[in-house]
Length: 431
Image 1 (spheres, rainbow, N blue to C red):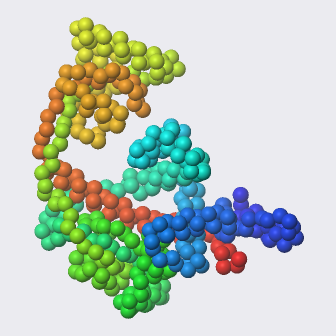
Image 2: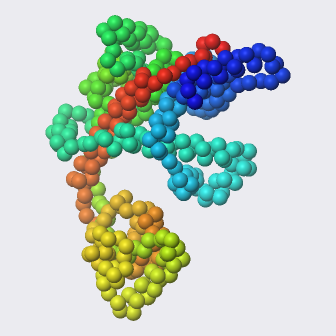
């Protein structure tokens, strides 16, 4: 739908709403590229946010402020979904069901029990499934646009280790955050205006104004609707621009505005506490295993694959060599050449169904056929050992923390760029 057609639609709605009083037509609140946000859509989202604010016993911001904040969130969701659609992002029924099954498992229910709970409580399961699907699509988009492009070098890890002695790594900080945003390539006057606004906010906070309420009203960060709550973070989990400032602050202290490419940040330390030391001993279990994989296709269905593996397992029991059969029959070409040998693997490397079965086997034992997204397998555990992986584990934790910090910083910039480059027309003030 073109922007001209959408604008015509707005005029059409205005005309009909004034002439056909018997029929209530939903009003357009905003145009977002080639899509629109309707009044009903905004009201529904506001209702959800209000329920969350009440549940968390947070102060309620004025309705006009809340509606503007929620509208901005909807705009960003629309822009991201449009980009995802253009890039061809898709979620299969199997992927969606697996995601909802994981949510059900976290609530100690089967998928069927989870669905029945929705029905018994009068909730709309289809609407919930649609929200989960949308979240998966957005996650795929962010993965492609941001996460997959973020790299952490060994040198960055080494630099962290070298400078760690100067950081109190045993303390984590509960941070409040307010952002006064700046457009990319902001001019001197825009920077000066934003700095003055940030200074004014800091003065209000230091004079006793409630941080949560003020964050909800004025922050342009993505945590505005939660009162600017960034949660608990260690120094290495914070955006780089905060790391020199936060350790100098006491509880309840508010920093002067901190400049970054996104704008001016106002930080308050809400609380402090100790955290787990990265130097603690970490023991990891490694398993040496091999497998035979049979894939399904037009000529080989699930039952055929399962029966073929049952036959191969019987042959191994009768004396046939596992490695020889793997070379002849396994469709995992990489491991088949090595007699199905997967080498030494640790937790989290293999898909959950495979890892769970492998972990349940004693050395020498062969599993019954199991199914994974790759096909059907039989698995044999050859050896199992425990080893002190503290050094590598500590480095991997540091690497992940640096990576998360980079992703957070890049996400903020990416979303601001997406917003500033988009065609967005807001009609909220005209209603």
